[in-house]
Image 1 (cartoon, helix red, strand yellow):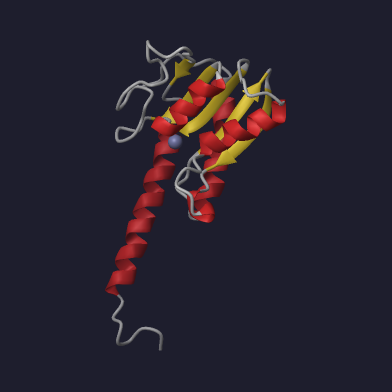
Image 2: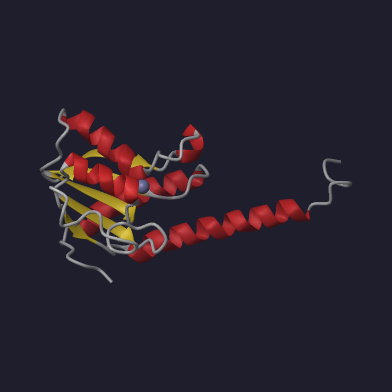
Length: 170
Ligand SMILES: [Zn+2]
């Protein structure tokens, strides 16, 4: 289900999906993000947990940091964040701190999503900033990329386990 999307949202979500695809090709969980201001992309990023050995290197957190550097401000009040997967608690916190004007995400994340799935940190009534939120934009593209990634990883793990150690490496 897509909620509160605008006509231009799919265009920018495709930019985030390109980032996600590139991350997946490098063995990262394929999640990508971009930050847009006045119709211009000011930052793009993808998951980098594996390459950085850092479980906090989520696409949207990296994109937010890059956008702050790009615009030279710690407030992203006139920016929209596009991310292919519903933000987790850490990233939702960063979104609120950055005063992001709007957040658009792709797939819902039933296990960790903090934009409505597990809870809703982005629109928590007691927090002093609540971005506008749209969810489910090109969700099937984002979720099929994720499910392909995880099924390929499971197959690789199963194949590694099935190799007989007495005959391997010869
Ligand atoms: Zn996150």
